[in-house]
Length: 76
View 1: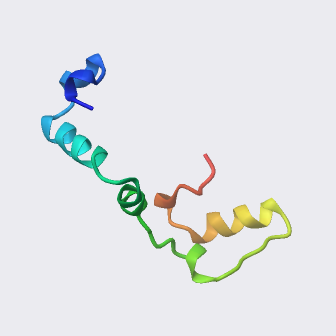
View 2 (view 1 turned 60 degrees about the vertical axis):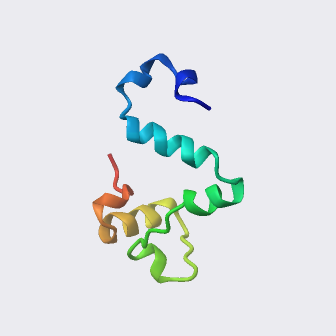
View 3 (view 1 turned 180 degrees about the vertical axis):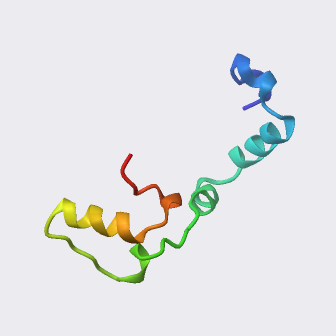
C-alpha cells in the first residue's frame, strides 16, 4: 500500500512511521506474527504455572494487593 492510499490524516503521521509500516506490510505473515507480540513479564501473575480462584472477589483482591499499577489490573 502506498502512502497516497492512506487516509486524509496521513499528513500528520511522521514519514519514518509510514516507511516502517510499509516495510512491515511487505514482510511475510509468519514473520509479522512472530514480531507482533512482545512477551512482558508480569510479576505475581507469571510466578505460578497455574492459579485458580473461588470467587472474582478473591482474584481482584490478589490483583489489588500484589500487582503493580502499570499492569492495569487496578479498579477504576
